[in-house]
Amino acid sequence: MFTGIVEELGEVLDLEHGTESARLTVRGPLVTAGARHGESIAVNGVCLTVVGQPADSAFTVDVMLETLQRSALGALAPGARVNLERAMRADGRFGGHVVQGHVDGTGTVVRREPGERWEVVTITVPAELSPYLVHKGSVTVDGVSLTVSALDDAAGTFSVSLIPTTLELTTLGRRAVGEPVNLEVDVLAKYVERLLAAREESTKVERS
Image (tube, rainbow, N blue to C red; front, top):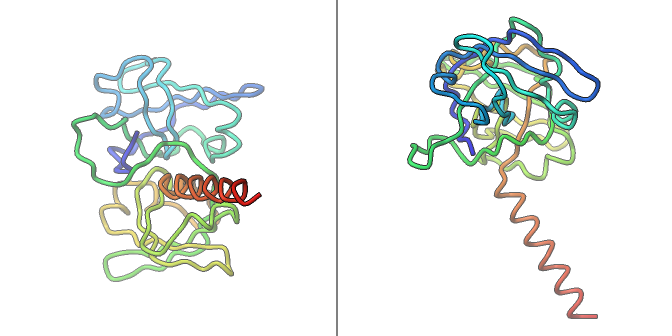
């Protein structure tokens, strides 16, 4: 599990595409310190497993076809910056919200509006994910835990307000209009939906 608090900006060293998978190598001195084979690191919000450490401060992960189809990892190229976060320790500080690292889909940055010391970024959201977003609720964008500051169901977009720290220390400060971002909605909303659906189905059975 992760919290959506990015620990460092890593750099893509290599992305080797296979037929139904890819192998990604990233440099990240902080997250690789003490990292071992089999440990989890979130790359732009995608939970991936360390399978090798080819050089100091670098790690390699395998990316399956399902992940490539649901996320924007396949579009990465050497030199690209990525948000990195190690899996949360059981005794760690919970700084963001519950983030699984299971990306639900991608959105596209459609607008950036600079403020006095912040920036409002508007992003498209797939129609099937829109019901899970609520005003002032949590959403993960490229692995960053954020609060939904506005929703526009008609336009199929939502907005987040980025403080200077987020702009400086994550990729979101560099994402240009037209670029894709990984989205993960709040898992609590999914559980609520599942429980309500099960209750509704149970009620139908009882009535029949």
